[in-house]
Amino acid sequence: MNTNSTKSASKAPMTSREILGMKLKNIVSTNKQSVEKIGDNAWKFKDIEVDSKTYDYLVRLEAKTGKSGKTFKKRNLYRIVDGAEQKVELGEFKKEYLYKIVSGLTTTKVPRAKISHWNDSEVRSICEYIRAHQTEFKTENNVTTGNVPGIGEIKYLVGSLKPMKNCHKRQFGRKLYVNGELSCEGGGLILVDRALASKKRGRKKAEKPAEETK
Image: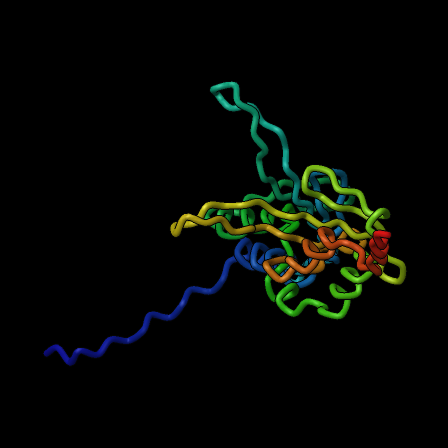
């Protein structure tokens, strides 16, 4: 008799490889600053406990040459035991964890949540200073750089124009960096464009009265 009721299969316990991959991925997602960068293509994770054993782990991108002769970078994971590196194979979990770990370590993209609440007063202060001191800012290849007292070094990327369906163009990709870190991005930075394009306001020269004819 079919009662249309099925018992949910109990989930198999996580393997040590899956636990390790998950822990490293979570660290990259939530505490990336704790990962020590070693050179250009290697990162060390310190004191990672798996199965009641604690080790440091090393993620490294290593140059390899394929059969076609093309060079690529292979993702590798090592466990450091008594100063020696022991390669760790994540097997079926490699794409699920190691690929995402490396992607998180190598990307410089700032999470949307961090830049969605930008500092409006800071942006407006920067714009006001730019308007009053335009000669202190240098623009090359759509990138403006300069220093704003009390805020620091700024770098503004104007972005690029892209054609839209209704026969007009829109500006995309505006980004404002303050002291080397992405502060905010998006269409709201049109304020910086306007500040850079503004002209100093001043009194108009009084017109000379026309000479009276004798």
